[in-house]
Amino acid sequence: MKKTAISLLTLFFVAFTALGQSVTITPTTDKQLTLTAAGVAVPNITGQRSNGTSAAPTALPNGAWMMSIYGRGYNGSGYSTNASSAITFGAAQDFTPTANGSNIQFYTTPLNTTSTFERMRINHNGNVGIGTNSPATTLDVNSPSSFIAKFNGVGPQTFISLHENGAYLGYLGSYSGAAEDVDFGTGGGNTTGK
Image (cartoon, rainbow, N blue to C red):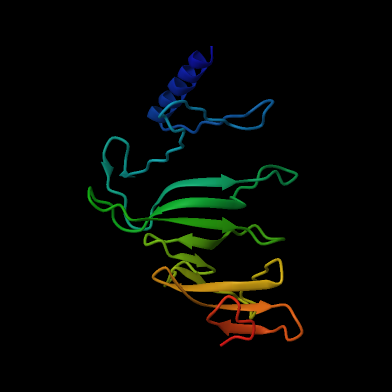
């Protein structure tokens, strides 16, 4: 029975996709959509987009979104027109058969507004930007205030470990005790820094 239901659902999607229509699935009891596979099959959700038309597709240009996942809430009179939060998958270059550079963008909406803003991006090169859409390094944080980041550890030692090519070089951290402070150090037991 399940196989028949899945086949009918697949046929339903294919039919509407061919017509270029939107499909709405409204769960009844579980309030979720579950994809299940066995063996080597891997469940996935795929969004595909081209430029041009369905009859005459063209390559996706730089900056175009390939797929989006939106979150919209009921506001008392209807569902919000704009996404309140979103994840989008975008082209980071003009697509060719040998060039498919991409990025992932994350959006949220501030309290008491309806405007959505990009908050974080993972660029084509793996750089992560928080507060910036053009991260210049592995982690690029841009804050609108002087309070940029918070690191909170549990225990008598809280530290950030620094490594070069996999080799430990030192730390930036704090150690509990009579002279607790923040140190730069070159050894795990060096509680006063060096």
